[in-house]
Image (tube, rainbow, N blue to C red; front, side, top):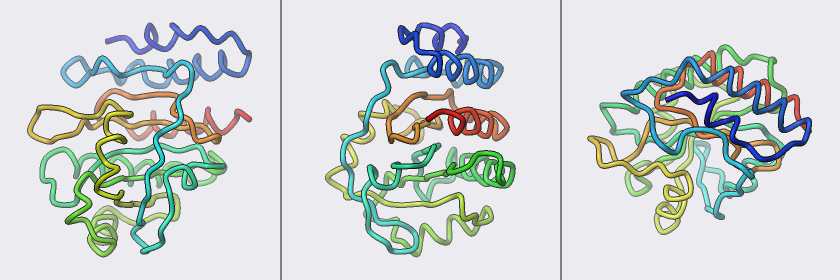
Length: 202
């Protein structure tokens, strides 16, 4: 799957949007591995705001997804702490991304959202982050159980594979709107490049 083709289907002709599309297409095109590609990968045109979801973070603070995304450029992944298949790889990728980000992308953040809110307490989320190396740029949270399905449907992340979710990353602009769905297991270098590109836009 060629993400350059998907991303360039954008009908938005604004200069900032064109710059973004060019940047993210270049950043993710070589990460498109056919065995892990999904039809939902590529630029989201126009950008879409997620459903309102109440979150409890690893530090036990309560917030909402809208509030957590506002003012940041964000990469989001779905995971659950007892996962032994894809989630450890996802955690390692976000940990590496956090280390690589440093101060490259102002206001950038990484969000890991649990799809097992009944089990993944704030303490469990803290331990999961600790396994990979915590970072002030990386937070984990669990949603309200009754709000999980609308979020998964919005992200187009449901799968019939061994895990009930894909290993994609979802990128949001600083207005809190979804602008890009990656292929599965995007390399950390590409996550950093996309967040850096997004941080340059208003």
